[in-house]
Every structure is written in structure tokens, then in C-alpha cells.
Image (cartoon, rainbow, N blue to C red; front, side, top):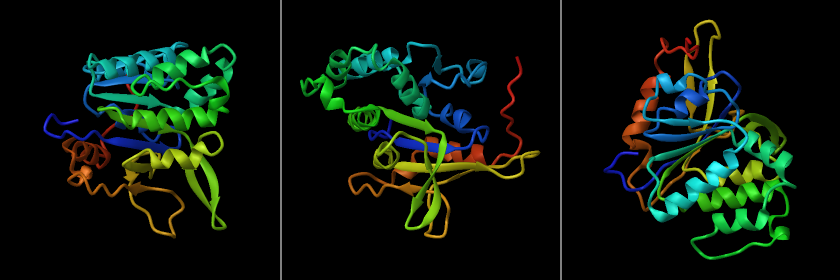
Length: 239
């Protein structure tokens, strides 16, 4: 985020594979990028101030990053989780291996609340707790999810793909919820929808923050808007 903008931005981006969610998230300033999808190979060559982490220990890296933010020693301006969908899948596969008490103590270190195993309930509850806590941290947070369908008032709409009630609860985390899509696959022009009407088949929003001056005018978001309108951008990085 801009050094002159003291309020961090929390943004959730969702959409189909290949529409450019990862490259969009990479445009945020100085990212620690947790790539649960293993889809950012060679991005380091294009976004040199970012650090991209992959592999089996990303949940541990996220814990350490949160601890560093709390201590004021974190050297990045943005954390990207790509994707929260596969973070949940990783948690499901590792659930019995995780030290749940240690994980919760790390997450809630600031208020000294130590959760018990049963407090987590399930992976969905863990996701909601994680997002709620990360929202209190003084850093930009960019969350990417895959896309799912949910029925709202009888209409099938596009929503972030998350476990259980996390699908809806995750929407409260973000200042900006953007549905990303592409037009012509042969010459794609990418769009990030951040507002919607009752007729639209996707969920998007901008949170109205009375305590902040229009967060959508963050200088970085203007950069994003320009990126999305540029038809010449290719997602096919060369080796």
C-alpha cells in the first residue's frame, strides 16, 4: 500500500482459472505471496520485489508471518493467499497433524486468547477465525479463491469457493470483493467487477468505510485498473 495511506486494503478476488487473478494480486506492493496453487512459476522474474513461497509448509510460513507482523518485524507490505480454497484443502489433509493449540495461540497472540481443539470446530470455522484476525493486522491482505455456485433467493450466482459457511462469511472480510473474468479467450480483455446489481450472476462489493477516505482510490488500485484494461498483457510467462 502507499506509504501515505495508513489504512490497509483487504481485497478478495475470485474467478475461473486463467483469468489473471494471480498476476493481478502480484501487482500489490512488496508481496509475501503464499502460492498454495503452485501457479506462479517464473513470476519472480516479473515482480522482483515480491517473495513467492510454494510447497508443503505454507501454513507454517503464514503463522510465522503473522508473528512477525505482531512484533513489527515483517518486511513486506502485502500478504497474498493464493488460493484460500487450497489453503483449506491443505488444512483438511493435514488437520490431524497440526498442533491446533499452537496454531491458535500464534493467531491470537495479541489478545492472549488460547483456543482449545474443540473451539475450532472444523476447517470452515478456522478459516473464518483466520480471516477475522488477519483483518486486524496493519498490512494489505489479498485473498484469492476459486469459483463456486450458490443459490441466492432462488437465483444461481457465482461465489468464492470455500468450505461451508466460510463461503458467505469470507465476504465480510474484504473491503473490496471482486469477481474477475475474461472476455474473448483468443484475445482476452480482463475485468474485475467490483459492483453488482440484483440481475448480475456474481457477488461483488465495495465496503463503505466511514472512517476512511474512499479506499478504492488507493494508488495501487488505479494501477490495477490500468492493468485490467490493457489487452496486450499476457499471462504466458516465458522460461
